[in-house]
Length: 111
Length: 113
Image (cartoon, rainbow over all chains, first blue to last red; front, side, top):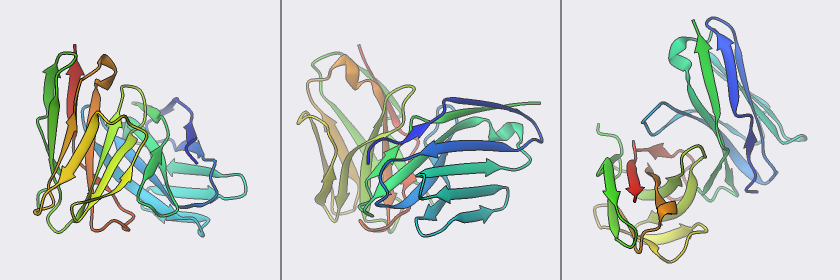
């Protein structure tokens, strides 16, 4: 349950949609999270999804969960330059409040 | 309301020294967790404390220790510093040990020379 994998980089143009993908290895995870980290800053919680859900939408953010394939994605609609940051997915195994993070996907939004 | 506050924000130490990092959780939050983020990687879990008791420990050597005080603030201590301890140390708080939302501070950046 400690192998959370993400692609390292994603580059999009302003106004396009961004899709950031994550795979995790432990189907016991109860909650899955997306955090955003801007340069020199801590982690900001964007959204999270409970493992019995397939999808969650929150304004410009859509999270899709495929439990069978252990795949999590974050879609950002109408991506803005302010969305440029590193995005981390994380799982909370067995609801122990012990988070395992991926290595992060650096999103670059070009004007 | 103040968020999670950490101090110091930056510090430089030399190998073999000891360091103490401090964290104040959000008011009303009783659980504090510590994470280490090495440059270019995701955060790694070090400790979780709830009501002054250790509730979880990650795969870190005994040089790493922590404690939580009656006011729920916390300290992370690292002894005999190694170059590889250079990292951003993040503190996160949550309402209780079973809560599923961690709120992170901005971190303490430690450089070991």
